[in-house]
Length: 171
Figure 1 (cartoon, one colour):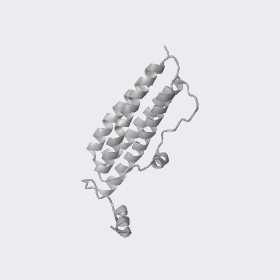
Figure 2: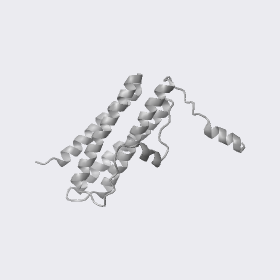
Figure 3: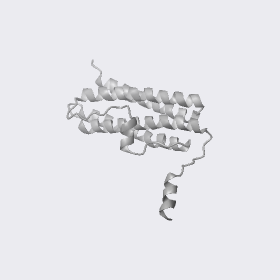
Figure 4: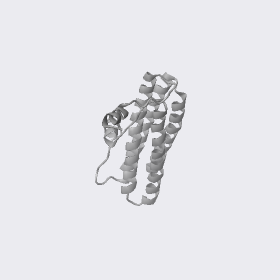
C-alpha cells in the first residue's frame, strides 16, 4: 500500500449500513455525541470526588461515589456503539469531549463532602434533562431502539440524584 492508498482509506466514509436516513443519523448521532461527552465528564468528576472525599462519612460516600461512577461509565460504550450502529460517529478525543460537554469541571483543591454530593446531584439532574432532549430527537425520527436505551439511563440518573439528595438531607 502506498501513501496515496493510505490517505484514501483514512478519508473514506465509514458507510455503516443503517435503516435511518442520513439526516436522521446525523441528528441522532450528534445528540448522542453530546450526551456521551456529558457522561464522560460526569464520570471523571464523580471519580475525582470519590478520590478526594473526606470527613466522618468517608467510607459511605467513597463507596457511593465509586458505585455511581461505575454505573455512569457503563453507559459510555453503549452510547458510542449506538451512534456507530445507526451509521454515525461520535467523540474521538478528550478535546472533543471538552468542546461539546455541558457538565462543568471542578478542579478546586478542596471541596466539602456536602458540596461534592450537592454538585453531583445537580449534574445528574442536568444529565437527565440532556437525556430527555436526546430522547425527543429519537422520538421525532422514530428511533425506538435508542429511545429505549435512554429511558433506562434516565431512570439510573434519577436514582443517582435521589441517593445524593438523601445522603445530604438534613434532619
